[in-house]
Length: 380
Length: 56
Image: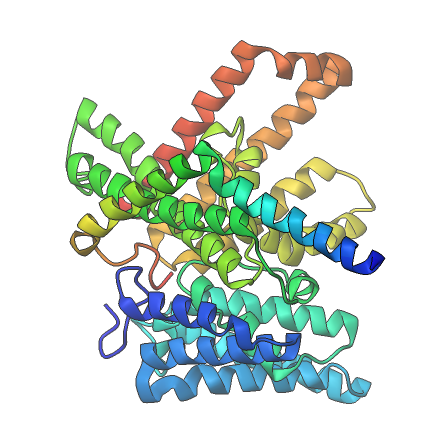
């Protein structure tokens, strides 16, 4: 898949070797600087194994992001130049990465380091430094942008959360067992449960009739097990090596509507989109409309946000349709809630929501909506 | 002397909590379940395709 480069696969020994290395270096982490430095060495070691001599690419990228972040702590003129440089660098890399089939493939190694996630972390870091007018240290940039256990599929940590939790921690026996449980649970989900579902039910939607209906359900469950399994491993490894790693899933199959679903599925991406696209755009739109038509403004901003989210996942018709259907789903929920609240009043609306039958129907309906819209990414 | 007593008491608390944790039957059930999950995953690991989200 990656050609000459390695892959971030949980079956590869270098990943687990890095976990072991991060554990073994803990006794020499006599202070937080030592901890940060040794973790940076492990992260760079993993990326070097992935890319070989092409490691210059992520190293240069981290250095450029670090220099831009430094410029944000300088004079206004330098800050403005830094902001332009940030937009240009990230735009070039994202276009090259996302439009690889039609572009020049200048940097094929971007795929090997999971650049989709690195790019979002770069935006978070630069935004945080811009707003706080503070530079970031080079070691922090390495540890934040290319953490080996979060490279393939996130989570995407908030820059300020990273700084807040970037401290030496010791874990007791109970926490160690919890971390091992998360790792075991993650690999079990991925290598046993997801594998079994894939073998028994998934055909790439080549089936028809009731088998197709079963496959639609199985595909959603498989995707959840595969993706959340990886996130479990990342959280477990993070707990074990003392690196704060946020949760990415919270039982999404129990979501009672599409808004609730996005609070439970790929949580860190949802929060990123909310912080960086939805809220700023919504505020600007509300200012333009003088605070009127809040529901329609929200609907418009949902469509923009999901279009960007879909394009970030992959610039393919399947993902664009998937993004569109989720924007429709979320918008319908917002409008329906608005109408219901108007008709019933807040108290009756809340008691209506609490009814077990309403809750059950809402969960089943949401599950089906998510499952059927997911088929677009495979079939289109 | 007072300080030494306090330190000893602290050590006792740490030791007993870790030892207490390891002596709980539930802890060993959890360890057993971790071992089963890891063994099953290791048996099937080389049959599974690389991570689905690779390259997203």
